[in-house]
Image 1 (spheres, rainbow, N blue to C red):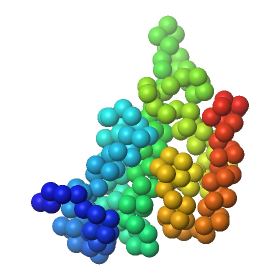
Image 2: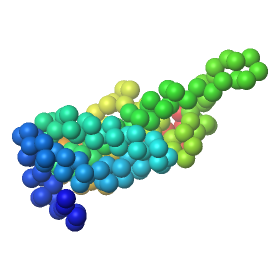
Image 3: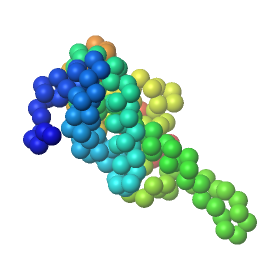
Length: 187
C-alpha cells in the first residue's frame, strides 16, 4: 500500500499501466485519485452524500473508460473532466427527482429554478446557467468550467478538449458572455 501522495508523473504512469490492462495499477490509481475526485465533486455538490455519489460514478467511469485518456495531457486533467461531468450528471438527476408535492391537493409543482434552491446549499445559479448554455452552445461549457471553476491553464484545457489554443480562448470568452446575464438573473 502506497502511503505518500504520488506526483503527476507517477499518476500518469499508473494510468498508462491501468489503460494497458494492469488491474493492480487500476486499483492503485483509483485509490490515489479518489480524494481528488471527491474534492472536485464537492466543488459542485456541497452536500457530502451527493458528492460521494458523484465521486463513485466518476471512479466507475475512470475504471471503465480509462481508454478515453490517450496520454497526450496529464491524466489528472482528463480526470477533472470526468469528475465535473459526473457531478453535473448527479446534479441533473437530483434536480429531476426534486419534485415537491402540494400536500393539500397532491399536485406536483415544479419549483422556479431561478428563485428556489432544489438542493440546499448548491451553486444553483452557476449550474442552471451551464444547463442553459449547454442547450444551444455545448462547445462552450467544458472549457468554461475547466477555466473559471477549476482554474486550469488555457494550454491544459486545449490539450484536454483537443482544440487549438485560440479556439479554446474564444470558447471561454463566448461562454463568459453567455453566462454573465444568466448569473445576474437577466433571463
